[in-house]
Image (cartoon, each protein chain N blue to C red):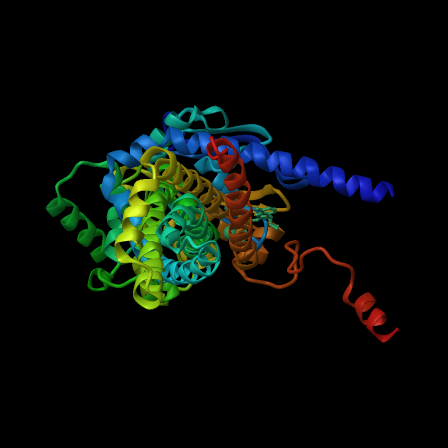
Length: 260
Length: 272
Ligand SMILES: Nc1ncnc2c1ncn2[C@@H]1O[C@H](COP(=O)(O)OP(=O)(O)OP(=O)(O)O)[C@@H](O)[C@H]1O
Ligand SMILES: [Mg+2]
């Protein structure tokens, strides 16, 4: 019993300690971000690795999610005789929820894990220490560009995901099933509000981008410098990112969308 | 060759104690290095030589005692001052630590690009000169994964001296080198040191090469300095430690084994 209590206590203390370390790490990251912005090519390179290279998986997944939404949406809506509203349903589900969330999850497993692995291996092979010994701050030179590369890529990827999804919904709804083309688009245009739907979706994807990128660079920087340590860090990045995205999604949704 | 020790020492350790957690690695280490000197640190594997270099480079902080480089206390230096000092230091890591996402040329160019505003053409000339000195000018376009262990270490050496530092820390510069490269690299270390009026500290296991090369030798064992002296004194010494090292004897005060229960007890356990 006391052993159990002690284990729980140790886990709690450990968790809080790590959270505190993460906060200090985040502070250092922000402090040294100025340096990495002054050297834009570093960040642009990371946008290429995190963003551009994730594009294919994001577009393909977006298309499939849109196809499914088209089928499911039509099946439900036609029961109420409102299959013309398919465009609204597809667009709103994607812009508000599925775009940011699914793109975030994909981004975490495609780009987040890669960033953790890269930084973790640099630590394991003493590259970060070597940089530090050359009076080059590894947080400014290695961590910050990867963080900002992720933060900038994520909303763009979510937007592409949504666009592709709407295209998929249109393919199924209009081309395959035969919903009226004009109704599909005009209903969508009439009901999707720029501020309420689109901006909120972008805010979500931005927040997810910050969360995933922070977790990815932190886990890499904090990992045990061994092969096993790196592999555990990668697992933690994917798992914590997924949990963070879903939990943050609930919090953000409860602030943004209350049927007002 | 040995210069007369004059003026303030460049590196000075006084009564340094260091522990990883509860495990004490070094206790009461005193060590002095003057400008112009090449100093060797020798000792058994795991005796704390790399740890000693890290203390001098400011990557680790002593638990007690002082580590001073160029008159500054490494334990109390704010980050900006530490970085300013490190710009004038070069360190060769035991395993090279080349940046794996850059080719050989960019690795050597890295400190120049980070810390100077030299035009690209000048940087190119400097990098090729440094690579030429370690015999790898032809390998400039290779990636670190395409190098052998000894080649990687030579590239790391070229990178460590790219900014012509005042203090060079070499962790086993000779490991993995054939006798020809070893001689060349040894001369390079000496020549660089003398040309720049710098000081060099090298951890090495190569007793004969360093006896010919260095000005002073420290022997580390069981967390302390057990012997030190100029090469001539070391050769003549009949200190048991020094004797065991210089003549590479298995038996002597330096244990080959990490502390463990006797092998016989293990075998008994296996039989039971
Ligand atoms: N990060 C660490 N945490 C805990 N103990 C460590 C750590 N790094 C090294 N040690 C211990 O400190 C001791 C000294 O290590 P160090 O790397 O300085 O040895 P060394 O003299 O350089 O050995 P070698 O010649 O094999 O490179 C070793 O016994 C090692 O077990
Ligand atoms: Mg070592």
